[in-house]
Structures are given as C-alpha cells and as structure tokens.
Length: 401
Image 1 (cartoon, rainbow, N blue to C red):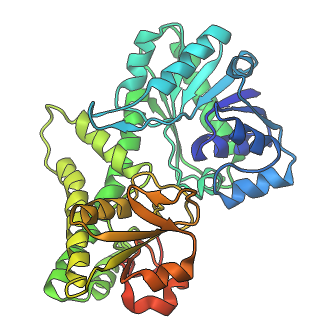
Image 2 (image 1 turned 90 degrees about the vertical axis):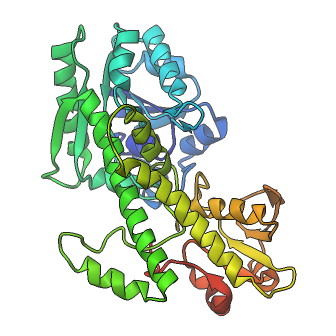
C-alpha cells in the first residue's frame, strides 16, 4: 500500500518506520533539515530503535516537503501533526490537522485519512461535518517519547475509531479494521487486543488514559509531599503501598510534577471537555501538579536559607531521562517560581545551543556547572552528579522514570 505520513515527530516517524518494512511510505514535513536527515538514514528524534532501523536501511521510506505530491500518490494518509494545548482557548490547536485534511482533499479526495494527533472529544465527528467528502478515521496513539517504535512493536492495544452517519459508513468500518490489522501485523505481539469503536469514544480513550497516568503521578507526588512535610521515609511508604497487586509498582516514582508533551495538555483538554459535567477529580489532577511545583520550589528556597548570594544549578531541562524534549517539563515550572523569588540560576543543558534560557545562563561544561552551583536541582538523577550528591535536590527515589 502507498502510505503518506504527515509529521515526523516521534508518533509520525515511528509509524513511518514501522510500516515501511511492508509498505511504500512517504514521510511529509515542513522542516527541510528533518527531511534531509531521514533521507540520509538518520533520525531527527531521539529513539534508539528508530535510529537503528533507519541506519540499517531496507525500508521503503523516503521523506519530502512536497505534501501535494505525497498525498496525491497515497491510498492512506496518517496525520501525526502537533496539536498543542492553547490555554487561552482551553482547546487543542488543531489547525495543522485541518491543513492536512484540506491538502489531501485537494490532491486526492479518495484517500482515507487516519488522525493520530491527539484531539478533543468529538473533534473527528465535527471534522466530518465540516468536510463531508472526507474519509476520516481516528486512531489514538499510546507511545512514549524515546520508546515510540518499541511501543508500536509491543502495543498494549490498537484502537481505531469510525465517525457515525457519514456517506462512507460501511467503507470506513472496513478500513478501520484493515488499519488495526495492518498495525498488528507489524507488531511483535501476536495476541494484541484490537478494538474498532466510534471515533468519539476512541478520542475519549486517549484523554482518559493519559489523565489517569497524570493522576497516578500526582498521587505519588502528593504522598511524597506528605512524607517530606512530616519527616517520614517516602520510599518505605511507596514500597509498602505498591506491594498491593491492585496498585502495582509502576508510575510510582516521585518527581517535580508530571510534564512533557502529553500529560499536561491531555489532562487540561479533558478537563475542558467536562464543561457542564459534574466532576471534582479532573480539576484536582490539574491543580495537584501546580501545588506540587509550589511545594518543591519552597523546599528549594528553604535549603538555600543562610547562603549568601546562592546560585541554583538546574540539571537538564528535559522532561525525563533519555529525552531531548523541553516541552512542559516540570523543572521549568520550578525555575519560574524561583525566578519570581529573585534567585540566580545556572542551567546545564548540553542540547541547548543558546547562552541563556529565559534569563538564566546556560553552560555545557558539567564540571564548571557543579563547581559554581550552591545547590543543584534535578528532576531525574544521573550518575554524573555522584561526586556532588550532597548538594543535589531530587525526588527521584528509585532512579528511573
């Protein structure tokens, strides 16, 4: 099958690489440097499995900035463009999805489009009403940044949603089943669960799943806040709680807050979808993350008491270990709170090619960073901080994400 993938972030590129072993795939992006890297067999994102497969070759995959040409040749277009959350509108910014839909309809109106971008509940149905000539499906992704291809090869489930009451009902139901079977065929899990449902329910699955993960992170962070405030051993409490098999020992490592590309925006979007629907918990999940950052910032301020003109070292801006993504990382929330208190900060971020970050100096020299920091804050521990462990503040108790 000829497939075009719109967007070469970790979702789009991992799908392109996954499907290119069996199908002819064209990855579309507006950034020429990313397109050039892919065509040279290199990855523009940090994912070891993707990097390995691109380097090995043997994939029927090319990248292009010529969207019209790619879509004109495609039987299937997978839309994996970014949908960042707009806090002013309380809504995902879906304009890039709509841009792709319009381009596909102009170039190849017969193509089936599968939206992989995360969208509000009800969005695909509304899009079908806006573009009744479009053949649209929605398939939520459940991928971790840095492990995206692995998660496609070992999926927990594969879901595809079909809009209701369109001119293509029977065709779209068949194409949805074909799509989940296609992904399952490329996976290394022979018995993966496959679900075909309505598009609106599939959209809700994505937002509720990520909000549950955010809730779990917030829960163990608040457990840690309580233990720290009362002088208790968080690690012992967490281990004891998580030995209950109904709870389990996953997503239980305290942090400065949940962050990254998915959990903050998805939990806020789900909360926005609750307008005029009774709830308490969804508001609490979002507010708990702010409260946690307030607590961590106050703890840092407390540790600085008695020091003359202290400098707080910020170890990495990334959302988690093994990532190069700064978006909505929790440590940036701590930085903003410390800046409001007038505290000087020094940032160690080797992937950042600029001399400062929102008014704080940036260094690539780790030894100088350690030497010039009065206190170092690290959302996740690294062994390269081992020689200055005594001045590192982290809530990473289990040394893992």
